[in-house]
Structure formats: C-alpha cells, structure tokens
Amino acid sequence: MNTIKHVFFDLDNTLWDFRKNAKFALDELYKKYDVENRYGFTFEEFHPFYHDSNEGLWALIRDKKITKEELRARRFKEAFDNLGIDNDALAKIFEEEYMETITNYNEVVDGAMELLDYLKPKYQLHIITN
Image 1 (spheres, rainbow, N blue to C red):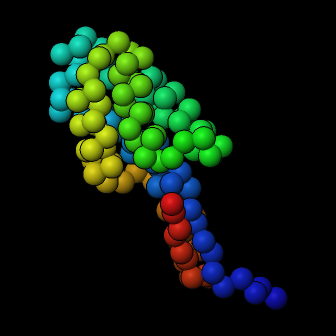
Image 2: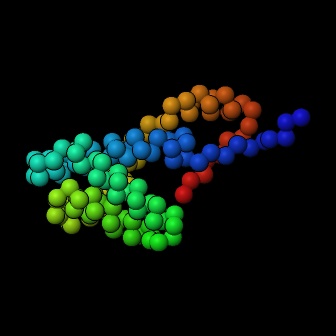
Image 3: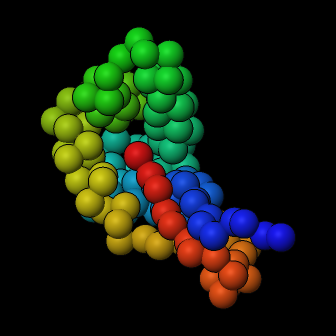
C-alpha cells in the first residue's frame, strides 16, 4: 500500500540548474560591463575565480563563520581581486544585478522534466528552496 501523497523537491540544482543559470547570468553581466575589453580577462578566465570564491564563502556559511550578507559583500570583490581587477564599484554592481539577472535563465537539470512528468499524476508535487 502506497501511503506517499506528497513529494518535495529542493529547487536549486535538483530541478533548476542553478550552476548553469548562474554562469549564463555572470556572462551576461561580464559582457554588459565590458569587463574583457576594460581589463583584458575573458569570461572563461574570470569564471573559475568567481566559482572558487563563491564556493569557499558558501562553505564558511555552512560552518557558520560568515553571514549571507558577508558572502554577498565578498564574492565578486574577491573574484575580481584574485584575478587582478581592482574595482570595488564593479564588484558591487555585479552583486546588485546578479540575482535579478539569473532569473532570466531557466535551464533545468537533465532529466528533471521527465521525472516531474512521471510523478505528476501520482503525487502532489512541491518545491522548497532557501
């Protein structure tokens, strides 16, 4: 006897491909603010610096060593600084526009739609996210 009536999914990187959408959003901002022409670094050179900074800061959040506000204040600044771009104003602009820009992209994790299509007639589906 199946007693399961509800299935809950986390949104980020379970259904919605946050990493892919984030990369698209960052590339859009990189182009919008002409970072490559202004500083000589391609987006593909920048992205690993951002990724490393962001992942390290999220680890500090998980360990309760910093707050989300500190992460937001540091992730782009550190990425640019580590690449050799000394422009705190640009880092602040990226932070201010990043979360809005990411909503322009809606890539889903491979197989997510097929899974949802399979589950939809059987269960009530829910999304939760932080």
